[in-house]
Amino acid sequence: MHGYSDTAEQHLKRLRRIEGQIRGLQRMVEEDKYCIDILTQVSAATSALRSFSLQLLEQHLVHCVAEATAKGGPEAQAKVKEATDAIARLVRS
Image (cartoon, rainbow, N blue to C red; front, side, top):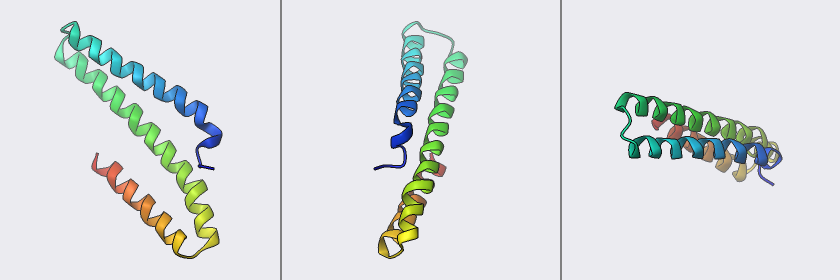
């Protein structure tokens, strides 16, 4: 069971809202809206995705990484490395 399983429905709801924001961006381009207005919406969508990813990362740390470290062994080291790599990717984006 994944760390986000209990909140999967909330995550899906949030992702659908983000999807709506992206469709709104497409519509803005199709309707030839002002560049700054589009960029403002891009920033909002980016922020929403970042917020979603941080929440998912927190759940991963609390559930998956904590469970693995409690058991110890090589799986714990692998989970910590996996989380560290994910954080690095988020920081770069």
